[in-house]
Length: 199
Image 1 (cartoon, rainbow, N blue to C red):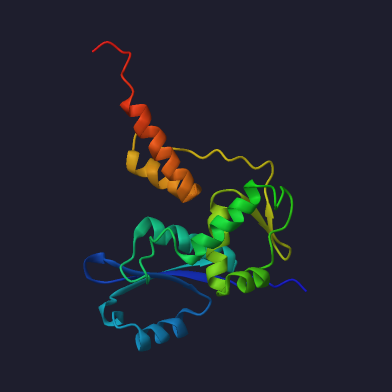
Image 2: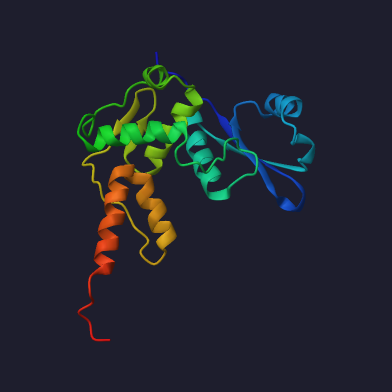
């Protein structure tokens, strides 16, 4: 029996000077804030709360991932920008299965329960990993049926050539470490070649 959509809030907690302290999602903000007050040592710093509601939990989880990456809240544990966190490992494994054809275009991703068991983690972590792929446009969710691979799948990604730091981040998010090392070596070799342009 398909799960009914669960209306879910994305919340931001701010301290003085509008400093963003924490971003999270919940279907029940009141009890969640009570829990934070009991177990978060930084809770007394909160002076303002911002809440935005989404029709489903996956939509809220996708917005949460994007917000944490873009806005860098102070207290989203283990450095929320850590690109090698477990939810990113889940996204990387699924992305590789999609690109390799192991999960072809049109096929359904493994169920949430299967991914929880495979990665020995929580539903929230799995949802964050899947939300990354949805944000990249690799998958699409169908209510009550699951997430499906879009087709045809292309490995092309936009690289911001005018911003080397952003280009490096984009490549690091889509390539294995060994491939990044090989690319770095190839770039160094290319730069070392004598220029044919007149000085």
